[in-house]
Length: 110
Image (cartoon, rainbow, N blue to C red; front, side, top):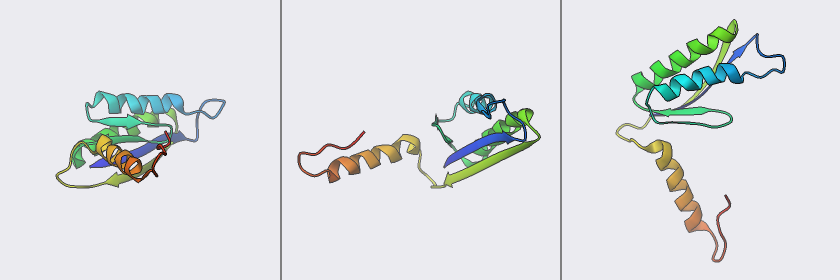
């Protein structure tokens, strides 16, 4: 399964409204898990089985709790039994489809 999640404290944060230190604590936990993962500006996506992915998300959420009295957690899951490598596989299939659908002489945008 793939789970994209965003976790952040609410109720307390830096003077400029940034939550990067709390998010960094969560991402450290994800990366230390050894599970395939990807972080972008909005979400961190983890790949693995149900129990291992949600154990990491729980630990990351608990870590963020140190930065405030409340924690906001957003999740989106793609549950597809028997599939692995989908963290990159889905994107590769999309890029292939875009390249194949490009009109003659045109190139796919970055």
